[in-house]
Structure formats: structure tokens, C-alpha cells
Length: 446
Image 1: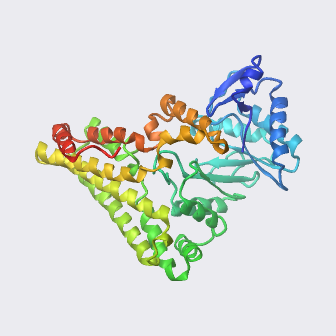
Image 2: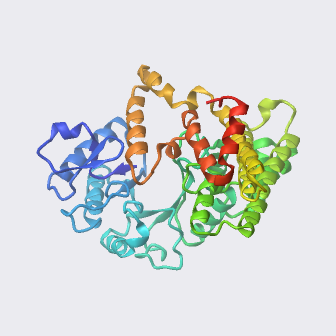
């Protein structure tokens, strides 16, 4: 994947005479309107392809203008850098297959006309990768759906900050639906993207196998997948386990500072005057279903595999534990708003915090402590870690797009902030009682 006009931050010192735009991840962008931009990018990409020679029929995914960046005043629209990028790659690798991706606007939904203009300008052999914006089979999206231009859907199977540390956002059934519709709409392929390096190996594996078996019905595919992964004897139980777990993977179970978490839903409902008993009962029933799904998923998995714990899919089992602890805490928090008196409300809120503390113990490992990253950066083989650490600090602390760093990069150090968010989501009249109960519990493990 190449990002047109984007170069390492150090280039700003090399060519201070150029008009450069700041980019995330220690990068700068040469203004695409600069006559030198094409030559600079051909030199930069050419060096990359020298070190990593392209294979036959190499696939290139191009971000035509940074990533969700607003265009500058020096170019008419995104068709300018997109066409320049195509020319550069055609010079470097005439046989390569070039695809332009769609998330290069701050909000693609508001820029369809600009995208249609871009597609009209692109040569017909240049493809499009549609990022998470939906399969537009019913809409002649610049010839995209009519088969005149190669295209593929890209689905995020993980994102930052939703299901830490797994961050699963796409379920197997959803992937099946998107990719089946894409195939019916003439897509030439499909891409599943993981934002996090330590994301769910189960879902990645599932997505890879689904790409070759999109014609199967979802239930048949899950059974077929479980049979290949675990063997015929345990396949049916594991297929049922994945079905049950998939039903519980919802945004409300994100950690408390996520804008989509249950704590934030409670706060918004309170501000809107909607936090009444009917609202609470509805969510209590829903959270009870999440809990039941996670528990039954673990039961199916444990009953379907040998007694040897090493045989259990560790990532899957950790997900069920995460959902269980979060669901229990959310149930206590919701019930605190229906409590009779400050004492009962405080007890329930303290229970919600206690569930969070129990969950935090699974984060007490070196790879989930941000404090360990500077130490890793001292090792030669991971010297680039210091760049990641700087990006993490800058994006988490200063980016209006991502907000609080405690949501962006979940780690043990942030559980105090999560705990404060749980307390804030409880009823005011039970706050003192909750804090008193937590004092009696002793210090938090973080």
C-alpha cells in the first residue's frame, strides 16, 4: 500500500524549500500541486521496489491523498494526485495492478460527487477498493458496480480501541454477507484488514478461508471452517461456540472511555432525559443476553475440545472472559439506577468497578503495559518502536479524531481512568456509598 505524496518526516529537513503538509505517523506530504511531486514520489517508490521487487501481476493499493486528509488549495480535487500516482506506478511497474482506495476523504459519504468525478477521470483498468462504506451494487458509482472497473470491498475485521486487546469489529456472519454481496455485484476480490497486529487470529483465519468459500451458506461455512481447523470430532461444538460468541460482540462492551461504550450510552441517555425504567430494563435484558452468549460459547468450546488446556483456542477463550466480566459490570451499573436508596446504588456501582478490576488482571502482562515500550525501543531489532511510542502519545493526547488516549491504546495504566468513567456513569446519589465500598475493598490492582 502506497500513500501518494507522503514521505518520512525527515524529508522536511532535506527539502525545506518545498510546500509540505503535516501528516500523522511522523510523515509529511509534498503538495501534490508541486511540479516536482511526481519525480520525488517516483524516486521514493522506486527505491522501495528496488529493495522489495514486485512479483508478477503485483497489486498496489493507493491512497490518493494521505488518509482522510482534507485537500489543500493547490489542487482541484483528488483526481489530480490519483492520476499522478497511477502515472508514477505505470513507469515503475507497467504490469502492476493499481487500485485507488476510498477513505482518502474526511467523510466519503459527503464526497460522492468528487469520487464520481475521480472515477470518470481514471483509466478503466485502474481499480477501486471500497473501505467499509457499503457495497453499492444498486448505485452506478462511476461505473464501479456495472463491471466496467475492477473493484473490491475492504472490511475492517479489527479496529483500535473496541475489544482490547483483540478489537474485533467484524463478525464471521457479517463478513460472509458483505463478501457474498460483493461477489454477486461483480467484485474481483475482497480484503480483510486488521488495524492491530495482535488482533484475533481466529477471525483472520476465518476471513482468509471465507475468501475461498463465499458460495457456502454461513452456517455451512462455519461448520466447514471448524472441521478444517479443529477436526471432524469437535467441529460442530466449535461452530456453535463461534456462533454464540459472535452474538455478543457489540460496541457497548468496549472499555468505558470508548464513545460507544455502555457507560457513554448511559451518560447520553441521562442528558437527553431518557434514562427511565423502561430504557434500563431493555438494556438489562440485552446485557443479560451478552452474558449468556459468552458463557455458552465458552461451554461449547470446552466441551468440544480435549481436556488439554493447550488445545483450546486461547484468543477465543480470552474474548469470552472479556465479554463475561464487562457484561457483569454493565448489568450492575444499569441496576444501580433502579436501586432503592443510596446504599444499594453504591453497592451495585462498586460491584461494577470490581468487575472492571477483575478484568484488569488479564492486562497485567508486559505486552499490555505501555510503560514497557521505551525499554523495547532500546533493543536493536525493534528500534522503530520509539517512533510508534511518539505517534501513540501524539495521536492519543492531541488528536480530535481519536479523543482520549485511554480509549485509543487500551493498557493497564489506563484502568484508573476507566474506573472513574464507571463511577461517573452511576447515579449521583450512590457515589459516596460506592467510593466508601471501594475503599473497603482495598487498593486496585493497577
